[in-house]
Image (cartoon, rainbow, N blue to C red; front, side, top):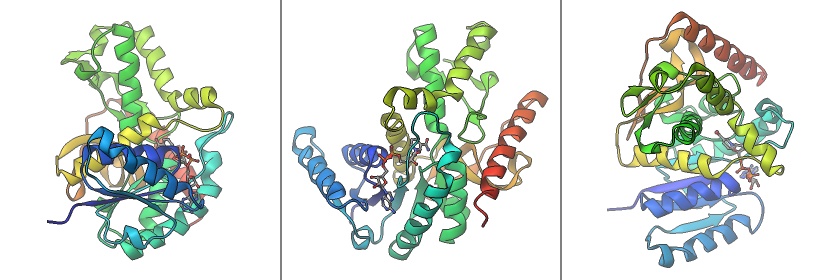
Length: 309
Ligand SMILES: NC(=O)c1ccc[n+]([C@@H]2O[C@H](COP(=O)([O-])OP(=O)(O)OC[C@H]3O[C@@H](n4cnc5c(N)ncnc54)[C@H](O)[C@@H]3O)[C@@H](O)[C@H]2O)c1
């Protein structure tokens, strides 16, 4: 039986991290593609040489061409410029639009049955762009953001309460920007609502830090943006798909009426399995939450409009 094939486009910080994680998980062989001569080859070989130490049998290869990506089961698209201090994700739109448009055609040509996971920013907009350009059904194109955003919120809750991250559950809706919609009403520690464990002031502070979580890392790093947590998040999506786990995870998915929204890629809880996005799950929202969701959707729509498709 052939192994699964996972291709990662862009062998930069996020791409190499995803490649490393999925190789360690032994969920498939990995192909990394980049346009910088030597970068994917060098990182690919270096990662492969870590396999005898770490004890994984996945093969990893880095290349500048797409032939090696042929018949991929999952393709993670990380190619694109990252933020520097003072930049918003929207500032990346024009450059990353060109990169994504140049990449998607080659991916599709070589792997017409793959599932695409978008990572490049602005995330919801690049997911929409990829969906429009690849011609795949909506279940086979999605974006990674919600797993990262919820991971940040969980981290801050765990730090505040000094409890295990394993017991924290939460839901975040909306676009992957400062207007994301974390839902404290759906946040629990071992089933206990967070609202019973922390005062409102503390929750608001953690929510604000979560919304600006990407910017916080950018302001530390100065030369780029986060990649360990984003890489782990994308790898978790690949695992859910290739192991057909039917996990319920927050992902950017194309909506057709869910949450009252249509023709938009937006962060929502989905069931993730062998068929990609197998179901969008709608949670009940109160008036205030609905208002925040529509504000977030408005800014994603503005960004999608800037694509001028
Ligand atoms: N969705 C999220 O939550 C999230 C989180 C972190 C980063 N990101 C985004 O992911 C993208 C990558 O971030 P990074 O930190 O890895 O950046 P990086 O600069 O380290 O890596 C990007 C890589 O893409 C490559 N590339 C550029 N054009 C290409 C093309 N046409 N074909 C193949 N490769 C190409 C570059 O050579 C570079 O190696 C950025 O757009 C960033 O904003 C998204």
